[in-house]
Amino acid sequence: VIIGTAAVTDRAFLRAAVSKYKDKIAVGADFRDGYIAIKGWLEQSQYTLDAFLCEMKDEGIGTFIITDISKDGAMQGTNLALYKRLSEEYSLDITASGGVSTLDDIKKLREMDLYAAIIGRAYYEGSIKISEAVEVAK
Image: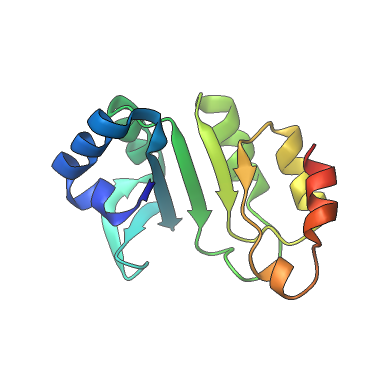
């Protein structure tokens, strides 16, 4: 289960979910301009991405879907520098989301040993074939 806004706004709910389901809980960390966005990207929270990751890690979360909103759907590549930094600084299972638009993006994310990547628009527009993405990610 992926918890998004509720990870920010309802910590008791998050704690109960983690207590009951342990590592089956992941947190979606969508961010813009360095801050976590909530409620379908309509509001900015008070948390920076790094502060949020640290707090969530302390809550027992080890899996994150991290979306750079500025890259999402733009078909201009993903935020490789961000994912490289996060993979080096944190011992977390990170799924890269937002802007994954080429096989080269997938190759570079794989080299960072990220947990996964989400391919959205690139798949729908035919820029990436799933069979090729799977091969590159092996």
